[in-house]
Length: 109
Image (tube, rainbow, N blue to C red):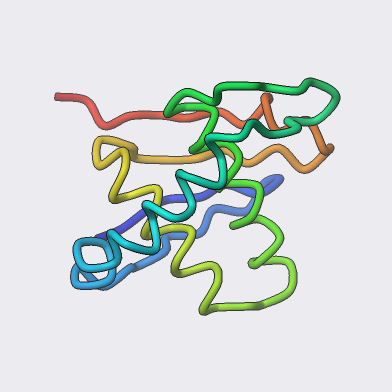
């Protein structure tokens, strides 16, 4: 599966093997349990992140993985996004530290 990610003016197409997207449910469930306790999103504390908040939080981790060239973590973060929100086409990742400014674009039906 593919996920398009925009960082500043650069677009990346991340190709994530289907088996990782579909067979890593236990890992993704653990990520969700961790986020269930709330998260700091930039300057704002979000006590109960909804699915789009979670996508933005994980998108921020994906951004860090891309910056560090940590392909394994990046692949798992992209797989989480594709697993939890398969209709997502593109993430425009915020690079200023305001996670809530990350834009999520969905595929047209």
